[in-house]
Length: 276
Image (cartoon, rainbow, N blue to C red; front, side, top):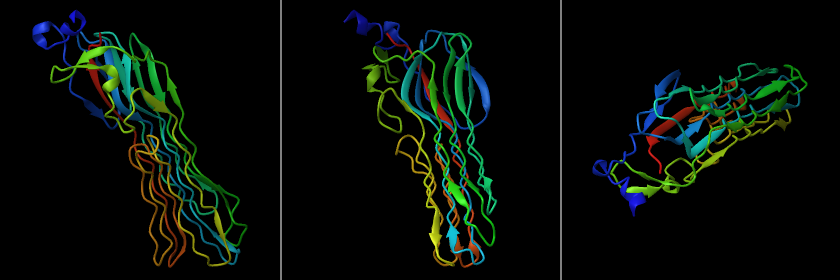
């Protein structure tokens, strides 16, 4: 009972959790407030990779779908030890640009989302997803080879807190493992991103083929950009969001082929806790 009483509201001397702060771009620093010993990362993800455009040919015996971009590595509801007063440095990854080349070229890869402390050292690096690519094609053939964007990898260096209690913003006392409000709804979750999809080539002159989907982020919680439609005038692949990969372009639409989408930007949302 004494253990819990230390956390019950300001009258008991405990510190309630701070409000969440969301970071969606750039790089900078912030400080750990006095009395707090933990940072709760509700979510964080590296930037998603861009997708390739579709490609149409002149009597080459087929058409090419744009491959989808990969997604960034992620964290959902992890809590790390920090030291009061230390400076925390962050960088938020950006999504990779779509690839505009028809027969050979690459889309941009997402960049990394990172967090480190002046005392704690590196806390995590969430690598961005790879951009899709194409190679070896020509307007009259051969058909190009299509490669989907790769998965971003997660490096977790900080000291994770998986047990203990804290006072929430309403002064209610909770176990740390009740923090499941992040995208995957799982406490202490982190993992690599995912590989984009690759519809490849269709067979036969003037065959129609839709673009490939971008990789989902946060496991399957956030969908990747949708591949472009090959019906009628067609549609471009859509951009990823929240670290997911961009969707690839379609081929042999009324105007030839369509563009791929950019990868989704990274993000981080955090608050401070006093964990006992």
